[in-house]
Amino acid sequence: MEDIDLIISEAADSMKKSLQHLDKELLKIRAGRANPSMLEGVMLEYYGSMTPLSQVSNVSTPDARTLSVQPWEKGLIPEIEKAIMNANLGLNPQNNGEMVIINIPPLTEERRKELAKKAKAEGEEAKVSIRAARKDANDMLKDIEGVSEDLIKDAEERVQTLTNKNVSQVDSVVDVKEQEIMTV
Image (cartoon, rainbow, N blue to C red; front, side):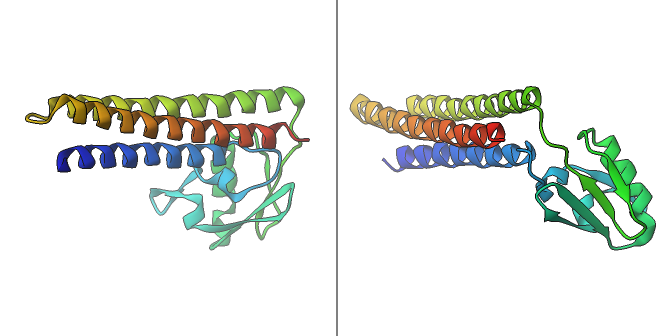
């Protein structure tokens, strides 16, 4: 019994990590409003090593359509601009000598549909990951020796219930993100 509970708990943890990863990925998909997490993946060279933008500057949103990047050192401004351009986010940074300012253009209908598709694709990836955790758990359950078939069947049903719950959570998270993207 202890082995079964451990396997189910590991499957639950794995599924939870899939959901957390989905949340992180969906944050990167912009919904027309400025959000500091849009620049999360931007890396720039800082004293010879690649460093995340958030570690060399303060990223904030003065309003819904603007991001401002205030570097700790003014000499980094051109490097920050170059890093944002190279990150291929479709953003045009401008500087005023003190900070980098990025105006977020409103999304076109076509771009909104593209982003909604991307959100759905991220959701599908999360579902695949959840199903993989289910498969691993079921394989481990079948490998347990000296346990009755009924206990194994019950444990497989618990894993399936867990899987269904997590898949429906993925669906609801993706639906919310799609609504957010498609709202003008």
